Length: 471
Image 1: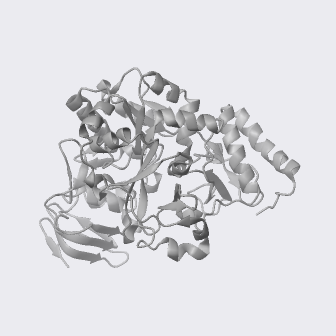
Image 2 (image 1 turned 60 degrees about the vertical axis):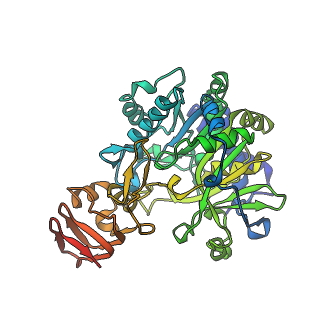
Image 3 (image 1 turned 30 degrees about the horizontal axis):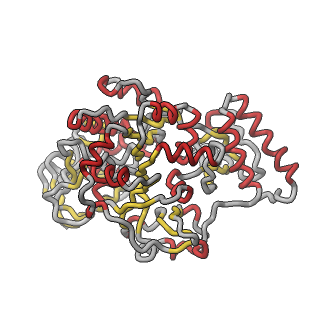
Protein backbone atom coordinates (compact mmCIF):
# COMPACT_ATOMS: atom_id res chain seq x y z
CA UNK A 1 0.00 0.00 0.00
CA UNK A 2 1.27 3.45 -0.89
CA UNK A 3 0.84 5.81 2.08
CA UNK A 4 -0.03 9.28 0.77
CA UNK A 5 -2.15 10.60 3.62
CA UNK A 6 0.47 13.20 4.56
CA UNK A 7 0.64 14.62 1.04
CA UNK A 8 -2.76 16.01 0.04
CA UNK A 9 -1.33 17.64 -3.08
CA UNK A 10 0.10 14.36 -4.31
CA UNK A 11 -3.17 12.63 -3.48
CA UNK A 12 -5.09 15.05 -5.70
CA UNK A 13 -2.52 14.73 -8.47
CA UNK A 14 -2.92 10.97 -8.30
CA UNK A 15 -6.69 11.31 -8.64
CA UNK A 16 -6.46 13.63 -11.67
CA UNK A 17 -5.44 10.72 -13.91
CA UNK A 18 -8.68 8.98 -12.98
CA UNK A 19 -10.66 12.17 -13.41
CA UNK A 20 -9.30 12.65 -16.92
CA UNK A 21 -10.14 9.06 -17.80
CA UNK A 22 -13.69 9.36 -16.47
CA UNK A 23 -14.31 12.71 -18.16
CA UNK A 24 -13.09 11.27 -21.45
CA UNK A 25 -15.67 8.51 -20.99
CA UNK A 26 -18.32 11.21 -20.37
CA UNK A 27 -19.06 10.10 -16.83
CA UNK A 28 -21.62 12.09 -14.84
CA UNK A 29 -19.96 14.61 -12.48
CA UNK A 30 -21.70 12.97 -9.51
CA UNK A 31 -20.09 9.63 -10.37
CA UNK A 32 -16.66 11.26 -10.60
CA UNK A 33 -17.21 12.85 -7.20
CA UNK A 34 -18.32 9.51 -5.75
CA UNK A 35 -15.25 7.75 -7.10
CA UNK A 36 -13.00 10.55 -5.82
CA UNK A 37 -14.40 10.11 -2.32
CA UNK A 38 -13.69 6.39 -2.33
CA UNK A 39 -10.31 6.71 -4.03
CA UNK A 40 -9.07 9.24 -1.49
CA UNK A 41 -10.16 6.85 1.24
CA UNK A 42 -8.06 4.18 -0.43
CA UNK A 43 -5.04 6.49 -0.61
CA UNK A 44 -5.36 7.33 3.07
CA UNK A 45 -5.11 3.64 3.90
CA UNK A 46 -8.79 2.97 4.50
CA UNK A 47 -9.91 -0.59 3.93
CA UNK A 48 -13.49 -0.13 5.13
CA UNK A 49 -12.74 -2.47 8.01
CA UNK A 50 -15.27 -2.70 10.86
CA UNK A 51 -13.90 -4.33 14.01
CA UNK A 52 -15.90 -5.96 16.79
CA UNK A 53 -14.97 -3.02 19.05
CA UNK A 54 -17.16 -0.77 16.89
CA UNK A 55 -20.32 -2.91 16.94
CA UNK A 56 -22.62 -5.03 19.06
CA UNK A 57 -24.60 -8.08 18.02
CA UNK A 58 -28.31 -7.72 17.23
CA UNK A 59 -30.34 -9.84 19.62
CA UNK A 60 -33.75 -9.66 18.00
CA UNK A 61 -35.72 -7.99 15.19
CA UNK A 62 -39.43 -7.97 14.24
CA UNK A 63 -40.59 -11.15 12.51
CA UNK A 64 -42.48 -11.05 9.18
CA UNK A 65 -44.21 -14.33 10.04
CA UNK A 66 -45.82 -12.68 13.07
CA UNK A 67 -47.14 -9.56 11.33
CA UNK A 68 -50.92 -9.16 11.63
CA UNK A 69 -53.35 -6.55 10.44
CA UNK A 70 -51.21 -4.97 7.71
CA UNK A 71 -52.71 -6.55 4.57
CA UNK A 72 -55.17 -3.73 3.86
CA UNK A 73 -52.44 -1.12 4.29
CA UNK A 74 -50.31 -3.14 1.88
CA UNK A 75 -53.08 -3.18 -0.72
CA UNK A 76 -53.42 0.60 -0.43
CA UNK A 77 -49.65 1.15 -0.68
CA UNK A 78 -49.31 -1.13 -3.71
CA UNK A 79 -50.53 1.64 -6.04
CA UNK A 80 -47.55 3.72 -4.89
CA UNK A 81 -44.90 0.99 -5.16
CA UNK A 82 -42.29 0.01 -7.75
CA UNK A 83 -40.12 -3.12 -7.94
CA UNK A 84 -36.43 -2.71 -8.72
CA UNK A 85 -34.37 -5.76 -9.66
CA UNK A 86 -30.57 -5.65 -9.57
CA UNK A 87 -29.75 -7.12 -12.97
CA UNK A 88 -26.17 -6.07 -13.61
CA UNK A 89 -24.60 -9.50 -13.16
CA UNK A 90 -23.26 -11.56 -16.03
CA UNK A 91 -23.34 -15.34 -16.03
CA UNK A 92 -19.57 -15.55 -16.50
CA UNK A 93 -19.04 -17.59 -13.33
CA UNK A 94 -21.30 -20.22 -14.89
CA UNK A 95 -19.73 -20.01 -18.33
CA UNK A 96 -22.13 -17.57 -19.99
CA UNK A 97 -21.49 -14.29 -21.79
CA UNK A 98 -24.91 -12.78 -21.25
CA UNK A 99 -27.03 -11.54 -18.38
CA UNK A 100 -27.33 -14.08 -15.59
CA UNK A 101 -31.07 -13.48 -15.54
CA UNK A 102 -31.30 -15.23 -18.93
CA UNK A 103 -30.36 -18.65 -17.49
CA UNK A 104 -33.23 -21.19 -17.67
CA UNK A 105 -34.07 -21.84 -14.05
CA UNK A 106 -37.43 -23.60 -13.68
CA UNK A 107 -39.76 -25.30 -16.14
CA UNK A 108 -37.73 -23.84 -19.02
CA UNK A 109 -38.45 -20.32 -17.75
CA UNK A 110 -35.53 -17.95 -17.23
CA UNK A 111 -35.09 -15.71 -14.21
CA UNK A 112 -36.35 -12.74 -16.20
CA UNK A 113 -39.43 -14.64 -17.40
CA UNK A 114 -40.35 -15.57 -13.85
CA UNK A 115 -39.78 -12.00 -12.61
CA UNK A 116 -41.97 -10.60 -15.39
CA UNK A 117 -44.71 -13.10 -14.56
CA UNK A 118 -44.49 -12.30 -10.84
CA UNK A 119 -45.16 -8.66 -11.66
CA UNK A 120 -47.96 -9.44 -14.09
CA UNK A 121 -49.61 -11.69 -11.50
CA UNK A 122 -49.64 -8.85 -8.94
CA UNK A 123 -50.84 -6.31 -11.50
CA UNK A 124 -53.72 -8.56 -12.53
CA UNK A 125 -54.68 -9.66 -9.02
CA UNK A 126 -54.79 -6.15 -7.57
CA UNK A 127 -55.46 -4.00 -10.66
CA UNK A 128 -52.39 -1.89 -9.96
CA UNK A 129 -49.57 -0.82 -12.26
CA UNK A 130 -46.61 -1.92 -10.03
CA UNK A 131 -43.77 -0.80 -12.35
CA UNK A 132 -40.81 -3.13 -12.87
CA UNK A 133 -37.40 -1.47 -13.21
CA UNK A 134 -34.16 -3.30 -13.91
CA UNK A 135 -30.88 -1.81 -12.76
CA UNK A 136 -28.81 -3.04 -15.67
CA UNK A 137 -25.11 -2.83 -16.40
CA UNK A 138 -23.73 -1.91 -19.81
CA UNK A 139 -23.17 -5.64 -20.38
CA UNK A 140 -26.69 -6.82 -19.49
CA UNK A 141 -28.91 -4.06 -20.86
CA UNK A 142 -29.50 -5.09 -24.49
CA UNK A 143 -30.16 -8.79 -23.83
CA UNK A 144 -32.42 -8.11 -20.85
CA UNK A 145 -34.58 -5.51 -22.59
CA UNK A 146 -34.91 -7.82 -25.58
CA UNK A 147 -36.17 -10.55 -23.24
CA UNK A 148 -38.69 -8.20 -21.60
CA UNK A 149 -40.07 -7.31 -25.03
CA UNK A 150 -41.97 -10.61 -24.79
CA UNK A 151 -44.05 -8.94 -22.04
CA UNK A 152 -45.43 -5.78 -23.66
CA UNK A 153 -47.96 -5.39 -20.81
CA UNK A 154 -45.05 -4.28 -18.59
CA UNK A 155 -44.38 -1.21 -20.71
CA UNK A 156 -45.72 2.01 -19.25
CA UNK A 157 -44.87 5.65 -18.70
CA UNK A 158 -41.67 4.73 -16.88
CA UNK A 159 -38.63 3.14 -18.54
CA UNK A 160 -38.05 -0.56 -17.93
CA UNK A 161 -34.48 -0.01 -16.78
CA UNK A 162 -31.76 2.35 -15.70
CA UNK A 163 -28.00 1.90 -15.87
CA UNK A 164 -25.56 1.10 -13.14
CA UNK A 165 -22.40 3.17 -13.49
CA UNK A 166 -18.92 1.91 -14.12
CA UNK A 167 -15.68 3.14 -12.60
CA UNK A 168 -11.95 2.60 -13.27
CA UNK A 169 -10.09 -0.30 -11.75
CA UNK A 170 -7.11 0.70 -9.60
CA UNK A 171 -3.75 -1.04 -9.95
CA UNK A 172 -2.82 -2.49 -6.57
CA UNK A 173 0.95 -1.92 -6.93
CA UNK A 174 0.90 1.87 -7.40
CA UNK A 175 -2.81 2.87 -7.19
CA UNK A 176 -2.82 4.25 -10.74
CA UNK A 177 -5.55 3.67 -13.35
CA UNK A 178 -5.49 0.14 -14.75
CA UNK A 179 -4.59 -0.13 -18.43
CA UNK A 180 -5.24 -3.28 -20.50
CA UNK A 181 -4.65 -2.73 -24.18
CA UNK A 182 -5.84 -6.21 -25.18
CA UNK A 183 -9.33 -5.40 -23.92
CA UNK A 184 -9.85 -1.81 -22.67
CA UNK A 185 -13.31 -2.74 -21.36
CA UNK A 186 -11.55 -4.70 -18.61
CA UNK A 187 -10.17 -1.42 -17.26
CA UNK A 188 -13.64 -0.68 -15.87
CA UNK A 189 -15.76 -2.33 -13.20
CA UNK A 190 -19.11 -1.80 -11.49
CA UNK A 191 -18.99 0.11 -8.18
CA UNK A 192 -21.11 -2.43 -6.30
CA UNK A 193 -24.86 -2.36 -5.80
CA UNK A 194 -24.46 0.61 -3.44
CA UNK A 195 -24.39 2.55 -6.71
CA UNK A 196 -28.18 2.21 -6.94
CA UNK A 197 -28.74 5.44 -5.02
CA UNK A 198 -26.48 7.53 -7.26
CA UNK A 199 -27.85 5.81 -10.38
CA UNK A 200 -31.42 6.68 -9.41
CA UNK A 201 -30.35 10.33 -9.21
CA UNK A 202 -28.21 10.56 -12.36
CA UNK A 203 -30.81 8.72 -14.46
CA UNK A 204 -33.49 11.16 -13.31
CA UNK A 205 -35.56 8.16 -12.28
CA UNK A 206 -35.91 9.11 -8.62
CA UNK A 207 -37.63 12.38 -9.58
CA UNK A 208 -39.77 10.61 -12.18
CA UNK A 209 -40.94 8.00 -9.69
CA UNK A 210 -41.91 10.65 -7.17
CA UNK A 211 -43.67 12.67 -9.87
CA UNK A 212 -45.67 9.52 -10.73
CA UNK A 213 -46.78 9.27 -7.07
CA UNK A 214 -44.52 6.27 -6.45
CA UNK A 215 -43.46 6.49 -2.80
CA UNK A 216 -42.02 3.03 -2.15
CA UNK A 217 -39.53 0.74 -3.87
CA UNK A 218 -38.86 -2.93 -3.22
CA UNK A 219 -35.30 -3.76 -4.29
CA UNK A 220 -33.84 -7.26 -4.64
CA UNK A 221 -31.43 -9.34 -6.69
CA UNK A 222 -32.66 -10.72 -10.00
CA UNK A 223 -31.39 -14.19 -9.05
CA UNK A 224 -33.49 -14.33 -5.86
CA UNK A 225 -36.84 -15.63 -7.03
CA UNK A 226 -38.20 -15.77 -3.48
CA UNK A 227 -38.08 -11.98 -3.25
CA UNK A 228 -41.58 -10.88 -4.25
CA UNK A 229 -43.86 -8.08 -3.07
CA UNK A 230 -45.58 -9.24 0.12
CA UNK A 231 -48.62 -7.16 1.08
CA UNK A 232 -48.18 -7.68 4.83
CA UNK A 233 -44.55 -6.58 4.67
CA UNK A 234 -45.39 -3.61 2.44
CA UNK A 235 -48.26 -2.66 4.74
CA UNK A 236 -46.01 -2.86 7.79
CA UNK A 237 -43.35 -0.73 6.09
CA UNK A 238 -45.87 1.93 5.00
CA UNK A 239 -47.92 1.97 8.22
CA UNK A 240 -44.87 2.27 10.47
CA UNK A 241 -43.58 5.08 8.23
CA UNK A 242 -40.14 3.53 8.02
CA UNK A 243 -37.61 5.23 5.70
CA UNK A 244 -35.56 2.11 5.04
CA UNK A 245 -36.02 -1.56 5.88
CA UNK A 246 -33.74 -4.52 5.28
CA UNK A 247 -35.01 -8.08 5.05
CA UNK A 248 -32.77 -10.37 7.09
CA UNK A 249 -32.81 -14.11 7.67
CA UNK A 250 -31.37 -16.46 10.25
CA UNK A 251 -27.75 -17.36 9.57
CA UNK A 252 -27.07 -21.07 9.15
CA UNK A 253 -23.71 -22.85 8.84
CA UNK A 254 -23.98 -22.29 5.07
CA UNK A 255 -24.11 -18.51 5.69
CA UNK A 256 -21.09 -18.25 7.99
CA UNK A 257 -18.94 -16.34 5.50
CA UNK A 258 -21.61 -13.88 4.39
CA UNK A 259 -22.28 -10.40 5.77
CA UNK A 260 -24.29 -9.91 8.93
CA UNK A 261 -26.44 -7.31 10.67
CA UNK A 262 -24.92 -5.45 13.62
CA UNK A 263 -25.50 -2.47 15.91
CA UNK A 264 -23.22 0.54 15.98
CA UNK A 265 -22.40 1.91 19.42
CA UNK A 266 -24.84 4.80 18.89
CA UNK A 267 -27.70 2.33 18.38
CA UNK A 268 -27.96 2.54 14.60
CA UNK A 269 -28.13 -0.65 12.59
CA UNK A 270 -25.30 -1.42 10.21
CA UNK A 271 -24.14 -4.13 7.85
CA UNK A 272 -20.73 -5.75 8.00
CA UNK A 273 -19.55 -7.65 4.92
CA UNK A 274 -16.84 -10.33 5.10
CA UNK A 275 -14.44 -8.02 3.22
CA UNK A 276 -14.86 -5.50 6.06
CA UNK A 277 -13.91 -7.91 8.83
CA UNK A 278 -10.32 -7.75 10.20
CA UNK A 279 -8.41 -10.95 9.48
CA UNK A 280 -7.89 -11.73 13.17
CA UNK A 281 -11.66 -11.63 13.79
CA UNK A 282 -12.78 -14.02 11.03
CA UNK A 283 -13.65 -16.84 13.43
CA UNK A 284 -15.90 -14.63 15.53
CA UNK A 285 -17.40 -13.09 12.36
CA UNK A 286 -18.52 -16.61 11.39
CA UNK A 287 -20.17 -17.28 14.76
CA UNK A 288 -23.81 -17.62 13.75
CA UNK A 289 -24.97 -17.79 17.37
CA UNK A 290 -23.48 -14.33 18.03
CA UNK A 291 -24.26 -12.57 14.74
CA UNK A 292 -27.62 -14.18 14.06
CA UNK A 293 -28.94 -12.39 10.98
CA UNK A 294 -27.67 -11.97 7.44
CA UNK A 295 -28.75 -9.47 4.82
CA UNK A 296 -30.83 -11.06 2.05
CA UNK A 297 -30.13 -7.98 -0.09
CA UNK A 298 -33.84 -7.27 -0.30
CA UNK A 299 -34.66 -3.72 0.76
CA UNK A 300 -37.72 -1.51 1.14
CA UNK A 301 -37.15 2.18 0.46
CA UNK A 302 -39.32 5.21 1.08
CA UNK A 303 -38.28 7.25 -1.94
CA UNK A 304 -39.25 10.52 -0.27
CA UNK A 305 -36.91 9.75 2.63
CA UNK A 306 -34.25 8.68 0.15
CA UNK A 307 -34.49 12.03 -1.66
CA UNK A 308 -34.17 13.91 1.63
CA UNK A 309 -31.20 11.81 2.73
CA UNK A 310 -29.43 12.24 -0.60
CA UNK A 311 -29.94 15.99 -0.37
CA UNK A 312 -28.36 15.98 3.06
CA UNK A 313 -25.25 14.36 1.59
CA UNK A 314 -25.10 16.39 -1.66
CA UNK A 315 -26.37 13.52 -3.79
CA UNK A 316 -23.89 10.84 -2.67
CA UNK A 317 -24.56 8.59 0.30
CA UNK A 318 -21.33 8.12 2.33
CA UNK A 319 -21.35 4.32 2.25
CA UNK A 320 -18.40 2.42 3.72
CA UNK A 321 -15.71 1.56 1.20
CA UNK A 322 -15.24 -2.09 0.26
CA UNK A 323 -11.78 -2.62 -1.20
CA UNK A 324 -12.18 -5.69 -3.40
CA UNK A 325 -8.90 -7.21 -4.61
CA UNK A 326 -9.07 -8.96 -8.00
CA UNK A 327 -6.98 -9.64 -11.10
CA UNK A 328 -7.38 -7.13 -13.91
CA UNK A 329 -8.55 -9.87 -16.27
CA UNK A 330 -10.74 -12.13 -14.11
CA UNK A 331 -10.02 -15.05 -16.47
CA UNK A 332 -6.24 -14.57 -16.29
CA UNK A 333 -4.71 -15.05 -12.84
CA UNK A 334 -1.36 -13.81 -14.14
CA UNK A 335 -2.80 -10.37 -15.02
CA UNK A 336 -2.00 -7.48 -12.64
CA UNK A 337 -3.79 -7.24 -9.32
CA UNK A 338 -6.32 -4.42 -9.02
CA UNK A 339 -8.64 -2.91 -6.49
CA UNK A 340 -12.32 -2.53 -7.30
CA UNK A 341 -13.75 0.21 -5.10
CA UNK A 342 -17.24 -0.89 -4.17
CA UNK A 343 -20.08 -0.12 -1.80
CA UNK A 344 -23.03 -2.23 -0.62
CA UNK A 345 -26.55 -0.85 -0.84
CA UNK A 346 -27.53 -2.44 2.48
CA UNK A 347 -24.89 -0.36 4.27
CA UNK A 348 -27.19 2.66 3.84
CA UNK A 349 -29.23 1.31 6.75
CA UNK A 350 -27.01 3.30 9.13
CA UNK A 351 -27.75 6.60 7.33
CA UNK A 352 -31.52 6.65 7.82
CA UNK A 353 -32.98 7.62 11.17
CA UNK A 354 -35.40 4.93 12.37
CA UNK A 355 -34.21 2.45 9.73
CA UNK A 356 -35.29 -1.10 10.54
CA UNK A 357 -34.64 -4.74 9.83
CA UNK A 358 -37.28 -7.45 9.45
CA UNK A 359 -36.68 -11.17 9.88
CA UNK A 360 -38.17 -13.07 6.94
CA UNK A 361 -38.57 -16.81 6.33
CA UNK A 362 -36.01 -18.62 4.26
CA UNK A 363 -38.59 -18.98 1.49
CA UNK A 364 -37.98 -15.29 0.63
CA UNK A 365 -34.31 -16.02 0.03
CA UNK A 366 -33.78 -18.44 -2.86
CA UNK A 367 -30.77 -17.19 -4.83
CA UNK A 368 -28.98 -19.15 -7.52
CA UNK A 369 -25.27 -18.38 -7.29
CA UNK A 370 -23.72 -21.58 -8.66
CA UNK A 371 -24.61 -24.60 -10.76
CA UNK A 372 -25.02 -26.45 -7.44
CA UNK A 373 -27.94 -24.13 -6.64
CA UNK A 374 -29.21 -24.34 -10.21
CA UNK A 375 -29.45 -28.15 -10.22
CA UNK A 376 -31.35 -28.05 -6.93
CA UNK A 377 -33.87 -25.53 -8.31
CA UNK A 378 -34.22 -27.51 -11.54
CA UNK A 379 -35.22 -30.54 -9.51
CA UNK A 380 -38.49 -31.48 -7.83
CA UNK A 381 -37.10 -30.29 -4.50
CA UNK A 382 -38.46 -26.89 -5.58
CA UNK A 383 -41.74 -25.96 -7.23
CA UNK A 384 -43.04 -22.93 -9.10
CA UNK A 385 -46.18 -21.59 -7.42
CA UNK A 386 -49.22 -20.13 -9.15
CA UNK A 387 -47.95 -16.64 -8.32
CA UNK A 388 -44.54 -17.53 -9.80
CA UNK A 389 -42.47 -17.93 -6.67
CA UNK A 390 -39.82 -20.63 -6.57
CA UNK A 391 -40.22 -22.33 -3.18
CA UNK A 392 -39.24 -25.55 -1.49
CA UNK A 393 -41.58 -28.39 -2.43
CA UNK A 394 -44.18 -28.69 0.37
CA UNK A 395 -43.89 -32.48 0.03
CA UNK A 396 -40.23 -32.31 1.08
CA UNK A 397 -39.74 -33.32 4.74
CA UNK A 398 -35.95 -33.09 4.85
CA UNK A 399 -34.02 -29.93 5.79
CA UNK A 400 -32.02 -27.78 3.37
CA UNK A 401 -30.80 -29.70 0.33
CA UNK A 402 -27.01 -29.69 0.03
CA UNK A 403 -25.66 -30.11 -3.52
CA UNK A 404 -21.91 -30.13 -4.19
CA UNK A 405 -20.80 -30.73 -7.78
CA UNK A 406 -17.28 -31.28 -9.09
CA UNK A 407 -16.22 -27.89 -10.45
CA UNK A 408 -14.08 -29.48 -13.16
CA UNK A 409 -17.13 -31.08 -14.76
CA UNK A 410 -20.16 -29.09 -13.57
CA UNK A 411 -19.09 -25.47 -13.09
CA UNK A 412 -20.73 -24.15 -16.26
CA UNK A 413 -24.38 -24.29 -17.33
CA UNK A 414 -23.38 -25.99 -20.58
CA UNK A 415 -21.60 -28.73 -18.60
CA UNK A 416 -24.67 -29.18 -16.43
CA UNK A 417 -26.95 -29.46 -19.46
CA UNK A 418 -24.57 -31.96 -21.08
CA UNK A 419 -24.52 -34.21 -18.00
CA UNK A 420 -28.24 -33.92 -17.27
CA UNK A 421 -29.75 -33.95 -20.79
CA UNK A 422 -33.13 -35.13 -19.46
CA UNK A 423 -33.16 -32.64 -16.61
CA UNK A 424 -32.34 -32.96 -12.95
CA UNK A 425 -32.81 -36.23 -11.06
CA UNK A 426 -35.51 -36.40 -8.42
CA UNK A 427 -34.09 -34.79 -5.26
CA UNK A 428 -37.34 -34.54 -3.32
CA UNK A 429 -36.21 -37.12 -0.77
CA UNK A 430 -32.47 -36.39 -1.07
CA UNK A 431 -30.65 -34.86 1.91
CA UNK A 432 -27.40 -34.24 0.04
CA UNK A 433 -25.92 -34.94 -3.37
CA UNK A 434 -22.19 -34.86 -3.96
CA UNK A 435 -20.57 -35.76 -7.26
CA UNK A 436 -16.81 -36.13 -7.65
CA UNK A 437 -15.76 -36.84 -11.20
CA UNK A 438 -17.68 -37.07 -14.47
CA UNK A 439 -21.10 -38.71 -14.07
CA UNK A 440 -23.79 -38.45 -16.75
CA UNK A 441 -27.42 -38.99 -15.84
CA UNK A 442 -30.20 -40.67 -17.74
CA UNK A 443 -33.89 -39.88 -17.29
CA UNK A 444 -35.98 -40.80 -14.29
CA UNK A 445 -33.06 -41.05 -11.86
CA UNK A 446 -34.08 -40.79 -8.19
CA UNK A 447 -31.75 -39.77 -5.35
CA UNK A 448 -32.65 -40.53 -1.75
CA UNK A 449 -30.92 -39.75 1.52
CA UNK A 450 -27.24 -38.84 1.26
CA UNK A 451 -25.88 -39.67 -2.19
CA UNK A 452 -22.17 -39.48 -2.97
CA UNK A 453 -21.00 -40.44 -6.45
CA UNK A 454 -17.28 -40.85 -7.11
CA UNK A 455 -15.92 -41.41 -10.61
CA UNK A 456 -12.19 -42.10 -11.08
CA UNK A 457 -10.21 -39.34 -12.77
CA UNK A 458 -10.22 -39.68 -16.55
CA UNK A 459 -13.31 -41.91 -16.61
CA UNK A 460 -16.99 -41.22 -17.29
CA UNK A 461 -19.80 -42.95 -15.46
CA UNK A 462 -23.29 -43.39 -16.93
CA UNK A 463 -26.22 -43.34 -14.49
CA UNK A 464 -28.84 -45.36 -16.33
CA UNK A 465 -32.49 -44.44 -16.72
CA UNK A 466 -34.86 -44.95 -13.76
CA UNK A 467 -32.07 -45.88 -11.33
CA UNK A 468 -32.66 -45.22 -7.61
CA UNK A 469 -29.53 -43.99 -5.84
CA UNK A 470 -29.43 -44.18 -2.08
CA UNK A 471 -26.32 -43.71 0.04
